[in-house]
Image (cartoon, rainbow, N blue to C red; front, side):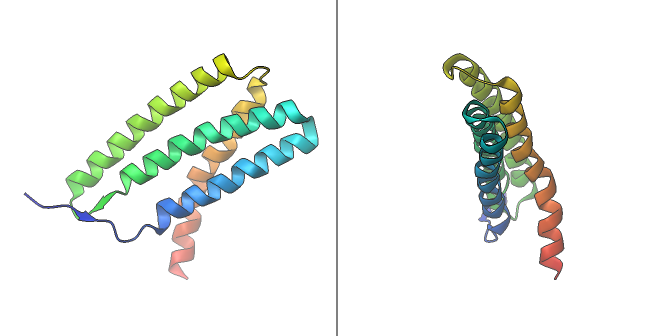
Length: 129
């Protein structure tokens, strides 16, 4: 059996987490300027849910290098954990955060999630330079 080696290249998951954290602040700021404090708070909550889930998935997925089977297992575990974190996060937010703007929360979530879709393309392009 192959012993897993720790992943030496951690630039991708850490860079993704940092860019997504910046989008949390950006989305809350835009919501505050355009729609007020309630929208800003709700957007920040949605963005934070997405950031926590995405960071967990990225760290779990890129935990090991060397063994394809362990890497695939990490991806599956990361995605399952992300699904649970998102579901629990929305449930808790709807129960605990009052007042809450669901649309602003969803838009904050989508903004951070969009970074998870765009960042790999940008990272690949920058690594080729």
